[in-house]
Length: 99
Image (tube, rainbow, N blue to C red; front, side, top):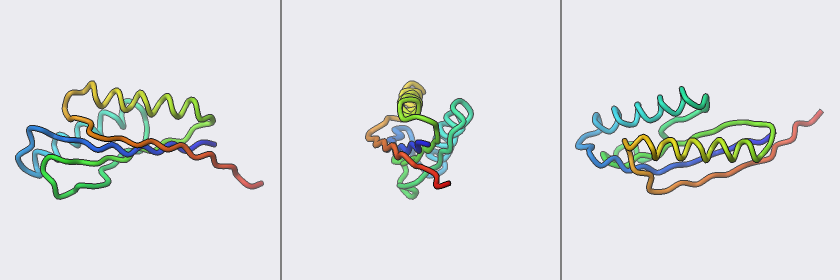
């Protein structure tokens, strides 16, 4: 079993309030969740108007598949043109279950 974790830093250019930030971020999170069926949530920069951090996790059977899907999610977020990706970090962890 492979667990993939992705941390993405976002810049929301047109945001002038936390309410505006939340509206844009909700659309991004919902689009990613619905399209890729992964866990995604805001994980940082909660009080900043134009910055956001989201975390994405998924589980798969092999590292290549998980890595490929996380790359597709990252590209999908960029192509939405709702936010600017300013940083991202991805980690894959191999987990074995004890029997």
